Image 1 (spheres, rainbow, N blue to C red):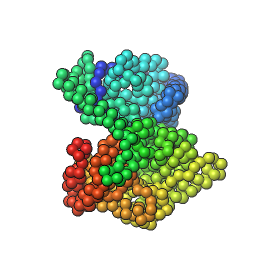
Image 2 (cartoon, rainbow, N blue to C red):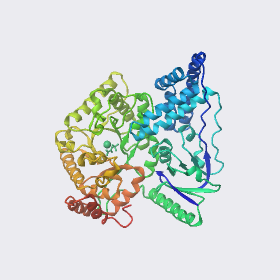
Image 3 (cartoon, protein in one colour):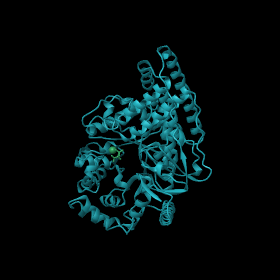
Image 4 (tube, helix red, strand yellow):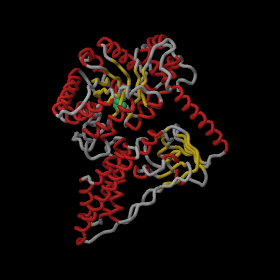
Length: 574
Ligand code: PEP
Ligand code: MG
């Protein structure tokens, strides 16, 4: 047996035979003489056209089969195939280096992918895989080589591969797919996102995986990132326990999903889901989410050469709204900028992107993006209750910007005689100053939601992505708890609803702190719902309030965590 470790990408244990899915090979390229230049340009353009129409067709088919989000990946790839940046890099390679269309488009794909990886954003780096996938398809069309037959799974199996581009993932029969183990890839790659959306265990970035494979079975634990090749008897027994435990936990989570998140002394808490695509809705509903507290809309905008139009956005929002009705869906306006650049949005590089022109601050120069989102949200509201919130609001002026944009979007729809319904407007509280001056604008809003991930980074001046600052990155820091308390007080005074949608809400111990501080709505990744529900059902609000009151004077997050963990029944803190 060999035990390998990688990055946990989607929780759950899988065991079974493995099927290796080969990467599609690059066709051979060659040099050409000056007399072939024109012909190679034509060959390149024809191949790109053909690849784009195949990808469009694939997108339509996958959407018609009931997977519109995967369909959208191929539609985005179809646009990428015709991306002028890819074409001009490839043409340049033909002109200057005299390579044929095959070599030119492969080189152009590599260069563009490299640029995306160099932007320092995980999500955009993951999109580099799409660019490579598209360039390879064009190269194969130019070379005239046929596609390999789709991977076959004759029995329930674990798929192992170097990497899984979306064009291959889409061809895998989902009913026989037990899990994925990939030699490369990151937790934000498509295969990982899809695995999480469908609840299939996955581990990525397992170096040495392919070389270690042997005939027989493999097993993986998507929560720990472990992969076992040819597991021995002791490991098999351990895995059987893990499988049974995770099956029990799953069954228990489903049984408990309909139980109210009410404390033993009768205080009700509403549990909501954070989602990034409408595909995540069914699992969230199954686990008992009473609506969406944060729909991160960035996913709709990434991996494409141009922004999604109003109709496309309205359809995506509507799908989420339909899945959760009669409970509300909270759509967050686009949160991009210096730290999350998007190729088609002109945003200048900045020295301090986290303190720069990001999120709602883009409205000053590019209000159109937000107006389109607001119109699409108002149209989706015909299907059920919709709330829209703006990220990175600093003060009353920013709140006013949101209200003005919403008023303009509304009147644009009226002018067009387009049907729509009213939406609730709110802000994310991610900047300490925005909480401190909350009295000056809360009364004009319907709600606010604490984005504790950013709030912590701006409160303690700690980059949220810097692993060297782990000591500060616990949201139970007394400074953060005090700010939450301030927000609760000001929201109550203004009579508006207040929720928490940062990762803090999904941590059972932190959820007890939030309960004690007066928060009654928590929004989290679906997988966190069962643990938080159990925690709320096991701790009296009165005791949570007393404990957090004392915790405000604790010297560190670690001390707060120890104090609050003591309130939870053994095992409930994990
Ligand atoms: C937050 O900052 O807490 C939040 C929920 O937003 P994001 O993690 O998307 O920045
Ligand atoms: Mg944030």
